Length: 339
Image 1 (spheres, rainbow, N blue to C red):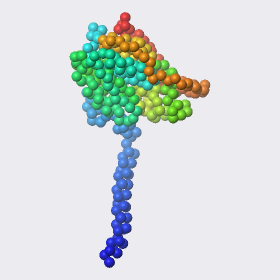
Image 2 (image 1 turned 90 degrees about the vertical axis):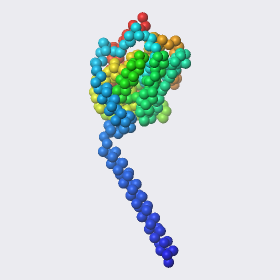
Image 3 (image 1 turned 135 degrees about the horizontal axis):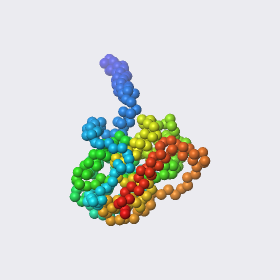
Image 4 (image 1 turned 30 degrees about the horizontal axis):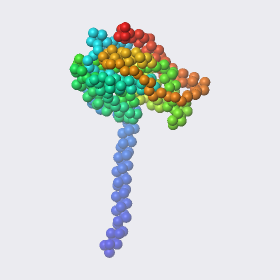
């Protein structure tokens, strides 16, 4: 009899257990969904990309008292020739894709091999969560440089989001300079429309149409992450949405120039020989010839409509105005180092 009762209740017991488990899973899932719905897109974006808020708050408070100067010719970063070459320091290379950065990065690696007391470090990738680890790694790179140690730092991919992580650039420079060493930040830019065209080689695989490839540059898609980034977008927002706060084109350009003026010592437009000479002057390194790297040998063919669309959207995004401003502001900058 007991065996029959047991066999009768066993399916009922299993059904109840399954129902309770399903209910618990549903409640947990519902809670997560509700939490996600309550979070703003901005909060979700920050949680996805940026370091722990408490750590950022401490640094933001410290940096908030730093002087803010307008991005004018007289406020560009310069070098005191009497202190050159620096005996130690950081070369911080912010590598924007399709600007010749692979050639520069390889040259920096060769310079490391050709000179004593020089090391090379990078942490980058094309996936979320990279920035937090890059920042942790930088905390080590900026320490223990004096009296004769140089470190090359390569920032690429998702390494650093300058618009929101600007306080770290202030902090790293301060940490290096208080050791009596030089913090030398550099980046390379190029013609705006040519850069967008060069980026379009990325649509060949997995076979995007041009309209799909540059869809994020359409005016209504300002809060969208694109397949690629233009120069102004990568300098300001890295791989985030190209204009998350929907600011005007003029404000976007102003912010980009402000970041260059505050933090970048060497800003050039497709002038690789000038780059090598200035770096060698600042560091005292023995010269190495730069060779072209990562060249694209296939053809890119566009219709007249497609070319016009590339030009129109690149201009509307602020890139043409940005590069024009850089040409005017940085023309002849640091000439005194090469005379």
